[in-house]
Image (cartoon, rainbow, N blue to C red; front, side, top):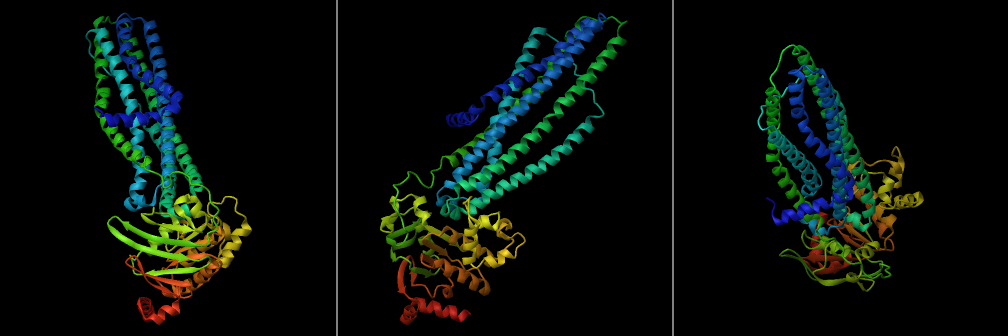
Length: 579
């Protein structure tokens, strides 16, 4: 039995079927016809045997054969109709759920990704949705079809009073040929479907990995369109596959009934001269109906397992869909120039671990401030708070003197560009990566950004220049090339505030030199916040802020900090000694 919460979930599932009620009616009619059609054989046996064989009435035999053929044709069409319409509805429900889940994924708050692995997220889109589809469609069809079959057979048995059953199945030699032929088509469609599923999972994985870039460059609509195109391909191939697979059953059933009809016809001709008892027809029809009760009863006994799996999947999916979005109500519009930044009395903790304590920092317009310190000192957290990836717990951040809490996240991020240590590139062309989420990007502006990032030279050496596909995660580019593409993306956005989170710490010296030139071009006339472990990359910063345990312990220009012979000077000496 379903408890109250399960009933609520199942009703919510049925809500996804409501827009497709016409197809649902077609599926229901096909299901009822198919379920009731189980009576064709047992109901035909009695008149055929009693009236045809016993009395030698060939007209009854001909009529019975015609009824059998017509009845099984209707049964086959009903099966094809219910199978296809059910799958159509299921695919539409899956399509709707996946699009809703993907839209939710794009808008989830960043802390969610700290608590859930990529695999668990991908599982919701694949396994959970599949189980849910089975509960909504296959299990309901089994319940309805087999319930109707059992009721019809029981009613017929009561009508007959008593009987025995005989089921004659004739094996047809070319059945194997048909199965092999259709199986080849199904294999080809299955390969296409697997490729589509791989493409969908890849896009989801990219969104998870590139969540900062998507948010900073307002790529929500762009990613939604990519995902919808891939999901639509899955829907098309799945429907084609089911249509081909559904042909197997009606073809085989027609072959069997034709073979059965031929046997009956031959038996009738051979029995013309032999009298038969009237009770034989009833006897055979009864046993036939009784034996046909076995399979639907067995299926009904197994149907509750997929229902429970589906309800568990529904709980997982609906919990995901009911999660709060990253941003709630839109804020009032403010005119931001993005010139100054102020962190005031910031305190922040991940759970019980305090990362920032009474952090205060003012960054003037056009100033480059570098944050240095040991791992866990709070450098990346400062950048994440500025970008709005995590909500403030205490204190305030001001941009141009405006409290960011009065700004929408879109407003805040509109004046920021973000370059990460682990470069995030998407599986598309170089031009599309530079002008990310801008579908009408002028080619001249893309080239200008790439030139300023010292990337134009190597781009033009590629086979298709700016239209070259960079492969998954930029796999066809070197680390330095990928970093310069990311810098070109930031230059293309032309935002007044720049966040560089350990942008060159993973590069070799040659690549770092080229990237450093691009970074210097990017910093020009911008307010920049740089986070780096390699001190050589930030020695020319206007100000260097040294963090320890979430607090500022030193601040000043490179030369001034060296003269203090403090923590920064010690870090610098360690850096020089390791070179």
